[in-house]
Image (cartoon, rainbow, N blue to C red):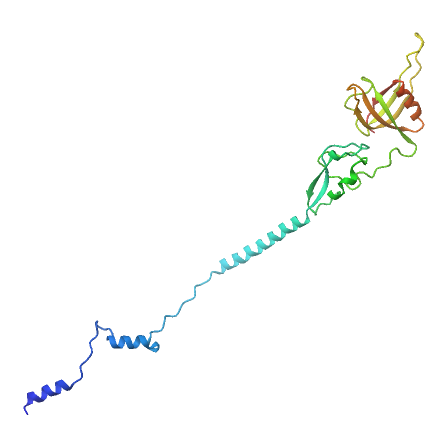
Length: 246
């Protein structure tokens, strides 16, 4: 056998190398085998945790605390609110409290002012004010705890005064007044008038008469003077003077 024949036979017996589809790549058979076998996969790169800013963390904690505190304050204020009685109109001392004189309002529980709960509003109607109750003010608990009227040794006299016998707009409840007796009409002419007696008292309440000109006045006076004042009033011989407050 010649030398050329031996070289060709040796060349045919050598195994054929596989080609990769791309330079530096993996042959299809190896690629399928590596895909099927999980142990041949490349490991995933490790994840790097993001860096946290301590300032933002502190700011979040502070905001959370402030939100909780604000919620508590709002809840405390709402829970402490209560309905109380207030004055819708001004009522002077000694005057009878009417349903239209009262209303209700809401106040905070932190208030130190003495008040009357709204549920007790009906109990105030028909009572006399112990002192002046101004419109818009809260009704204190002792608003109707004044002395009984008339008090011991006192009497209340009702008078009907003609026009010009009393000052207009000044006869408010508890106002001090002086009741002056007028001379009788049958007094002889030329005879000097005797000194007219005067009686002191306080206005209980006042209303306009049905005729639109007269005034209906209730006056708290001394019990000893009440008969004489009532007699003068029946004879239309009395005038009312408004004195200064004492």
